[in-house]
Amino acid sequence: MSNPANLEQVLAANGNTVEMLRNSQIGAYVYPVVAAEFSNWRDEQWAWRNSAVLFDQTHHMVDLYIRGKDALKLLSDTAINSMANFKINQAKQYVPTTPYGHVIGDGILFYLAPEEFVYVGRAPAANWLMFHGATGGYDVEIIHDDRSPSRPMGKPVHRISWRFQIQGPQAWNVIEKLNGAPLEKLRFFNMGEMNIAGHKIRTLRHGMAGAPGLEIWGPYETQEEVRAAILDAGKEFGLVPVGSRAYPSNTLESGWIPSPLPAIYTGEKLKAYREWLPANSYEATGAIGGSFVSDNIEDYYVNPFEIGYGPFVKFDHDFHGREALEAIDPATQRKKVTLAWNGEDMADIYASLFDPDADAHYKFFDLPLTNYASTNADKVVDAAGNTVGMSMFTGYSYNEKRALSLATIDHEIPVGTELTVVWGEENGGTRKTTVERHKQKNVRVVVSPVPYSVTARENYEGGWRKHA
Image (cartoon, rainbow, N blue to C red; front, top):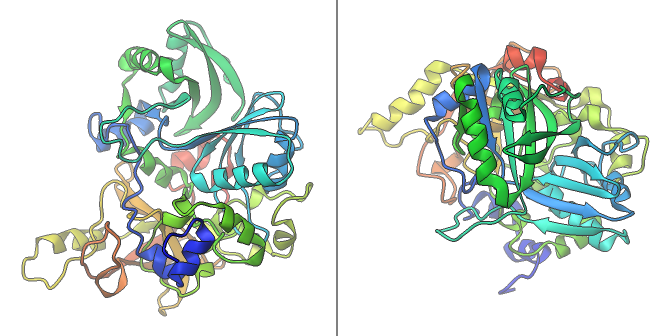
């Protein structure tokens, strides 16, 4: 098959799905357009814990504008979450699963007006929504505003909306200065309005580092004016803009796993979906990176309980995957944890780069985010050498002075246990463009809570990230 037209044909042409994804040539997952650093990533990380930051989320996520009398039904039918009490001017995390109960992805739903929603998130959940909207007989209209190109190569970029967050301990001072008056601190994930530079701006109550913050958005044409006003108002409170280098590392402290493998590569019930997905889709071109290796792609799948989404699962409605999830005992499933990496072992990784006599160095650990594939899967082993989990998102927190990763491990392993993460890929590494020739390193890690930060763990707005 010389020119596959869809994912199903791509898989048939390649034969081994794991081999295909582990050797993808897509390159690094890029957070596009936004400058890598505005000051330096260390100070930018420090600011979200100690002063205030401006996150620019305009470019790296898919936006779906969903309208129509069946819009809410489409969302309910495809989500593990209950939509029973979802009201206008609220937001909700959206988690879809396959008919087999495995996670496809996630994102945030904004209930803007009667029969009008916006989904914001990565491609897998967006694709699932578009597929069912197009094929499920729903009376809906979906406008797909894709993420900005990873490498625009100097060409102009345009989105329907810009999207910012103002976060950190000083965020509310910045917000009220911009607004020109006190602003009500609504409940988490409730929406309101504020004034910025003469514009009426919609807001979503958010929070970080135990302090209230806002997500805000508006027409793309007003982006520069609004951004300039925020930076000007934030000067006296130490607000700094955060670049694309530091931005994705914030989840290491707060505990969200952004990129589980979309579990759609197998199963007859998903064949129509694979035939709908184009040959250049995220699912067809994405990459798996890391030391966990299996011939069975299903070993990379996770269910909601394994990555902290158990509290979202509500059986008050019918949804894809309900029957499979009802058959699962949550108490026996793997659980989400933070792994704190040993400092001496980290020093060994870096020292190997400066040893000209070594036959190979250890896999490079980039800072502050070291992921080198769309989906990350490093093997976690116990003292006896048994594989007991999968490390899924890895980097460094300047605030904690620690390398950290978010992982799912066997449920009976308590906090405080020392385990090992195998860092790097086998046999010198795969053919991914992000992988140099290297050797593996066994890194000692300590099982730690989610979120890792004491501040976030005790005060994180919304509470769901506390659930392991």
